[in-house]
Image (cartoon, rainbow, N blue to C red):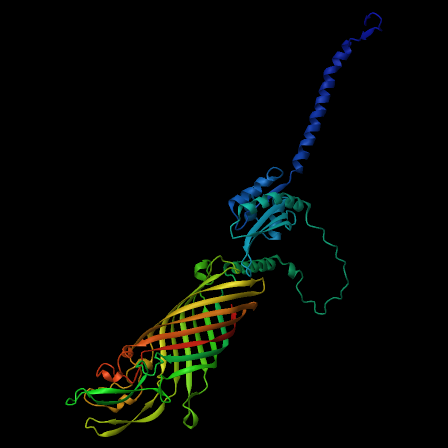
Length: 563
């Protein structure tokens, strides 16, 4: 012991360790280091075990950026199981889907705590796109943390990817906690069945359950590949309230020669008294004593319509060809008898009308969404018939020896039969204005341009080929006949105010239409400047007029079904 003293203070004592203490010091330090190492060794496994494992499976319809964003958000806090390892285990276990039991089977085999699955899908009714992501509890396979996002299109945008990256972590935490505990079922006594022939555990048969899940999957895929707005068949029937007006081109001035004329007889050419040539004498049609063209006054009748279109390519996944189809429309009108004349001389004439069109029809939903507009197109052949009954009539004429004769002929009252045959090209649009999962309301607009191929009897010269009257009159000229060759065009405008799909494929349509044909007669082009009798040749036909205008209009209500 050494003692040191400072002036005015107590002594300070220092003890030097003995030899025995020095020998025990290394053993104590070694024991302390072993204890510290054991403590660290025990703590390290505990930390590793707290880091849960997560398998991020491919998001169906997603993008690589979405997949990478999910992995980046989770890799810091969780151990990520490579998808190749998951797929290898699934193949070994013969698992092909991402159903609850499928996920649980693979997750338990690989000791995975959470499984991320997802899909981009479209709503079959509204046509909108959604991204659904589920964080599934590995042990049970049940989706616990569910995320859902509305998309502008089938492509996942950057803003949605950012939201997924921010919200996937909390969803995984929920999945780790597991699904909520199910309420215990209180057993109730039930008497045994009187006929115990049911197979035990039939509902739990995994093969039957897998078959049901596969069938449901096929149905979902079919709904995605063929949305409700691309039907295989669109068929309907309906009622028509339609009208018609027909008039010839004429000048209202009584002194004008731009009128309508009926063949009176063939007479010797007054400009060549010594010759044997003949010319046609035409008399103007009159209303009372005033020259006026005949016509069909504006009238209305009821009718029926049948329409069907088949789209055989609707099953394809290529949207631009889904709406390509073939269809036909048939209209028949129930016209009352037409009245001709007045008073006691008035007669009733049977009147008939029908129309048929058929050919290529096409519709294309531009953005592939039910609540978005569609483009419409058609290229078809059409035939439109309208006829008013004719009467028998006797005509007086002079034969080649200038002897008076009579001929039995036809009085068509200036309205020969009409049969328009045409090619029509149409464009239009379908514009939805109220769409939900169960209801659909839209409006349609169509415009068709007609190219006439023929006009029917109205453009014949005479009914018989034996009408050579250059050397004398023949009675055949008083039969059926028209105004001679014509040229013209037609158009139709269709507006559907309401197209309503009220229940499944049940469809109601309320529409209106206007159609017209305009044409000119070659033999009547110069009527405004020349009297018909002034020209001896080149104007031989049963009637003469400059042109005609034929107009149709009405409304249609149809009830049908789209499948």
